[in-house]
Image 1 (cartoon, rainbow, N blue to C red):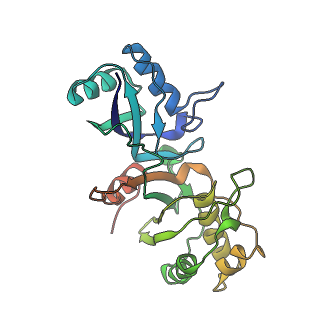
Image 2 (image 1 turned 45 degrees about the vertical axis):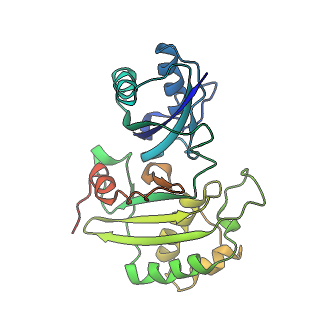
Image 3 (image 1 turned 180 degrees about the vertical axis):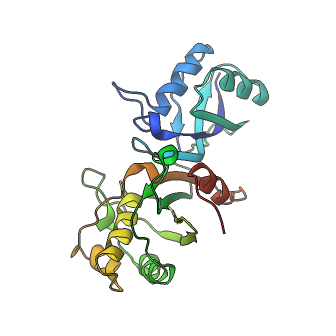
Length: 260
């Protein structure tokens, strides 16, 4: 008889080809499978959402089915002792057999970090741009985003078609040397957060006419994607659970920026 557990993990995506196990290259799911096999468990970890190569996570839920009835503290210690240093187990707990990290998530939050100067030590944790959009302009564009019934123009080619998404929250936090952009939605289209960030940054740089996002969503302007290294999976929310706050201070710290 198996028992189901939820792991909440963080990972530095710089050395991974994303979450999902592949035939070639390191992945987060692949590393978890390897470590569980070392602990005598054959399992297929299920993550809360897909992340591409180079994308990071701050609070990423995972569900696993295990043969042994592990005490949560013992399982966390065993994983911590065997996982590579670019994956951290934050919390471990038993969950009902039907709970699923991906299918039960009511919303997900992604965070994108931008910087205004090059930094050797943080180049793989933020996107450095020459000019940042001013907050007032971005807030006008995000109003368009929140009110839009169709954001399919932000989906990368090759993703599943016909998927709708509902934006629940979106915000822009200016910093002395950059900015933090966050979006919460019931689901994210393939490549959506990077396309949205790229649309805002490049739309402002190209003349910052108001309503730029309207033209992108209508297909009149291309949504050129931002690079992966500035993107972080921030959190997921589930029914009957107090939503965890967006870890702004942590993402600012790991990206080498400072708060006001």
